[in-house]
Every structure is written in C-alpha cells, then in structure tokens.
Image 1: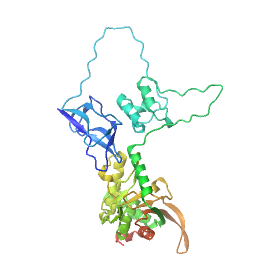
Image 2: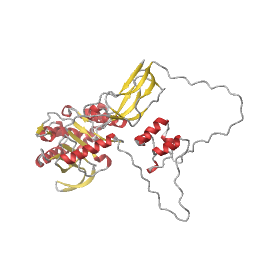
Image 3: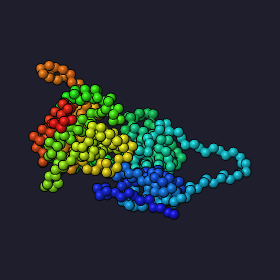
Image 4: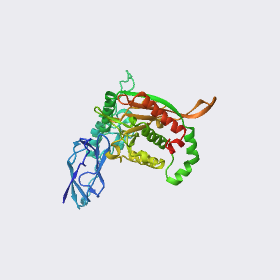
Length: 404
C-alpha cells in the first residue's frame, strides 16, 4: 500500500519551507518514526518522520526545493522490504584487466554536509557523495559544488594553476558566494525591522554580584543534590527580571498599531546561540517558576538547540527577552529589541574590578547590564527604574525570595 509523506502543517507565521537534506534514498528500507528529511523554515529545522515501516518508493522534491504545508514530498510502500542485492554471476576466467584508476585521495578533508551550500548539498545527496572525502578548494578549505561535481565524475578537485616560474604571483585570494540560510535571512529581516520601526534607546548600569556568588557557593551543592540541576547565574537574572516586570508593567508591554498591550504574565525569551544562528525559546509563566524550574527549563532548551530539536511552539510568543553576551566575553553591548516586544535585557561578562564601598576600595565581581527599549511607549525613567530594580535584587538576593 502506497503512503504519502507530506510537509507538516506549518503555523500561520511560516509560509513555506526548504528541503535541507534527505536522509534516505529511493529503495531504502525505513522504520516507523525514522527521520526521512529535514525541512528548513525561517525559524527552525523540522524533521519529517516516516509514518510506517516500509520502503521509500519515490522522492518528489529534492534538496533545495521550496515546499508548502501539507504538500506531498515522497511516497512510501508500506510493509515492503528493501530489494536484496542480486547474486554475482559466475564468470569465465579472463585475463586480468588493468585496475580502474582510484579517485585521488584528498590532500585535505573537506567540511561536512552542514558546511555545504544548498546547491552543494543537493549534489552530495543526489550523487551519494560523502563531503568529508572531497578535497575543498573554497575558502578555508570548504567544499564547493564544483568540487563535488568533479569528484562524482571520478576526478579529484582541480588543483590551483601553477604560477609561471619567471613571474611569481602574490598569495591566492579565494572567495565563495553562498546564499543565506532561511533562518539567517529571517534573523536579518527581523533585525532590520527592529531598527527601522522602533525608536530604540539603551540605558546601562552595573551590578555587584558578590552576594549571588556567595549564595551559589554556599548553597550550590545542596541545590544540585535536591533538584538535580546546577544553580547558575541565569536563574537569578530571570527571577529578578520577572519580579521587576511585575512592578514595571510597561516594560512587559507591546505595541499593536496605536494600542499598547499590557501582558499580565511574564513569558521570557532566552537568547540561545546555535550553529545556524540566534534563537529565542520562551520560558512561559516565569512569575510562577522556582529557581529550579528556571534552571531546568533553560537546560532543556539549550540541549534542544544543540540537537536541532527546538519546535516552532518553543520559539513563539514571549513578552521580554534576556540575552547573555557574557558567555562569549562581551564586556558591554547594546542589545536589539525583539519585536513585537518592547524591551530586552543584556547581560555581560563578570569581571573582578576595584570599587569603593563604605569608603574602602575593594575587589568585587562586577557586571555591566543594559536595557534597550522602545522609546515610543517606554520613557527613560521607567527603563532606568526597571534596571535599578534588577540591580537591587541581585545585590540583595533575599529581596527576590521575599518578593520585595
């Protein structure tokens, strides 16, 4: 019985998808729930599992093709088994033939499938070529489409032409033009939308994290034994943000035309960096979450992001965003608001700095924090007071535990 494999139902915010790569070829046996193909959307990469056990009978759209919701992309033969290889026919002894020329060994292994351009992935998939066995002539040793085509014809990647001995030439300056991925193009579009449609302003402050560091040292081990998760800095910032948003609701609001929408809940987006770009999965109803709930939620999203398992539902919504450039060593930055939200909090690296406290100079673990906000609805006073609120909570962590 033939079974159609269709593109999953896409949300209204996603118009179409691009076939990134097939994991099976025609004639391959497949198991129920085994991933057949990856579809790349503006936000995430979707896996399309096999609905039944059987054999992949037909592929209707190749890597690089654009497809729509519920479009048929393949046909499966349910219950069929993959054809067994035909036994080798007996042949009369012959004179030994000259061995076929082997494909030249690559002097330098090329990059993997993820590093290929969409055109390159299509060639590699259709010709069943392992990119790691192909010598790359592109920038930084990348494997280009031409390298794959030449390899598939039985030849090695073209060697660079030798310079005339009498006229030495300067070093090579290779270039490679590759299209943006769907996700990168969408990120670029949203960032430009933010810059062009929001009257954005950024305010800064600094936080002494000595009390947070002390609490993590004294209670971190017990916290991990009790909850099975480490006590990190992010849970303090997320909790402090949720408490501050309750007291400064305009920071948690959004603009819709000439209306301001006040949200009576705190759904906080946490910026996570992946190989394909920045994503912002949402912790929902943070106002009701404990420190352990927050740490587990962040850890779960981080794992999903690394494994490419984030769903569209994980990324939708959010009333406020927190981004932590400090994980990469950033000392100070101006984060960009994630529309339709109206504000974003930027965390930065923690540095031991000399500060004056009670007339004495002493070293303390200091962090610069920043809030970028939509000045159309948020006044500077509100933004500064919100930032000061977070500072006060982090410098006195017991305040957030008591809701002060």
